[in-house]
Image (cartoon, rainbow, N blue to C red; front, side, top):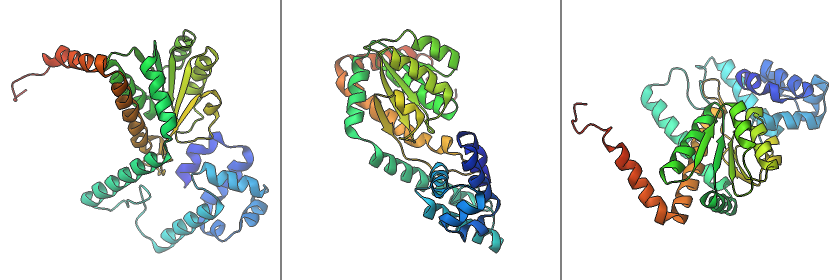
Length: 287
């Protein structure tokens, strides 16, 4: 909880930070409080408590309160600390593997349930017809942006990934109607991604956002929003890392959809790219 609060505090108001710091500092005490009690303790409002709960990743205060009670019980029992919500510091590796696999499966299923097929279809249509595609992302989301770009390049589309915020804005200025800009951001509040997407939006490009926060600030500049599962956080596995599973599912949906729409040109382009790289793979199994 303390790690989560440190990560998310910059995106909170001062009153929300007071609530977050209070629950992180005294999980047991706060678990015993009603929403009114916690608001009075922190000198805030009930609405602020509820908003803070949602920023911390819980649907409402009731869910946050249950999480605090569980955390307090773990602390009281002296159980081994958890490095993720399901994995304890002393878990054997077979258990770690199985628990992570279950978490990945849950993230994929939740993302599939979150995705609006109509929005995905519209994004595929725009990408398939685009003159040029720019993709923005930083950190873990930047890796996803690169993955989407590489896939599109392999089937003959003109796509570029931009992780440098200055270059991203510089390139966004060149976009116009008929181009597509894709932003990948779990929080929906990453300034280095919001800024180039805003510029692309103002230039008339079709803008697509892949995010775990459908209410994020960046969606003000989105023509299409592709929502992924809002991943659970832990100190060693922040949401930006674990959400990548859902983001990559969206990327694969977009890639396959575009490949379907452009199959006559995509198939030869993919074959050509394989052939161009074949000589870089040694036939000798010892290499």
